[in-house]
Image 1: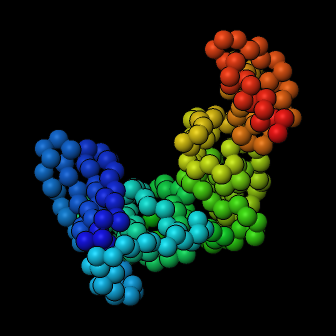
Image 2: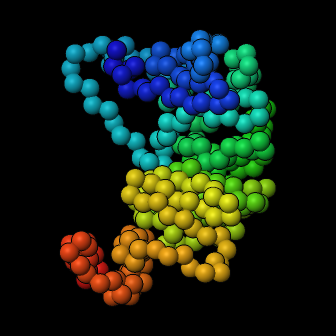
Image 3: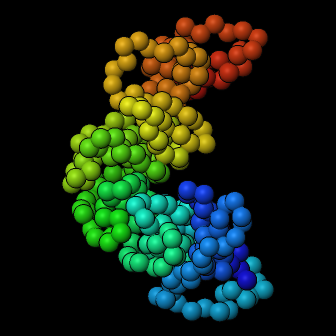
Length: 275
């Protein structure tokens, strides 16, 4: 069944229970210690999708059309807020809230204009589309606010993080937006903090932010440090180059002494800067 082969089961663990979807349209909770199924609920289907049985059963090569990044839902593992576990499936553009103890479907909300989950906590769930951000209340999924982003080329790329009264959101151009958690209004936008065209997202580490992706891990301070921590100058210069800060990378690289271990890396970075 080609349709099922294109789906992936998503799994999360919370308080000794594993919550997982299946490729056959079920959502279940499994006790981590005994491996026993606590409950299983049928996931809501995508009733609005046009039926096309031949597309799934044809022996011919099936080529899937790729959608733009700003209009494609990012597959999410089940996530938690309050007493509810939330699930979004690729085959149905809706958010479903299940009671963690019983598996009862409490409420369902259409989020067709969203492409990813930015943040979830006890107070709010924040979703993003290509240009739209909206927040809703856990449990009832009542909308708290909706806002539109500016029409530049950068789109939301991954998980954001709440830092006090601000929500930090990573973008595809390597910048980070800071928005009010109460209204969604833009507070500031900082460039050169992450490599451009990178995926990943943000985590909190005390008062600092941790930016991660397949090509980097970086700690971003929200306050001016009293003393700069020791760091590898070559790695720092490479990261500055990836974030588009060429002059800073060149200046820092001039302080690096090439040796038998790092000589090739230094030469590559010098070539990138010269280019």
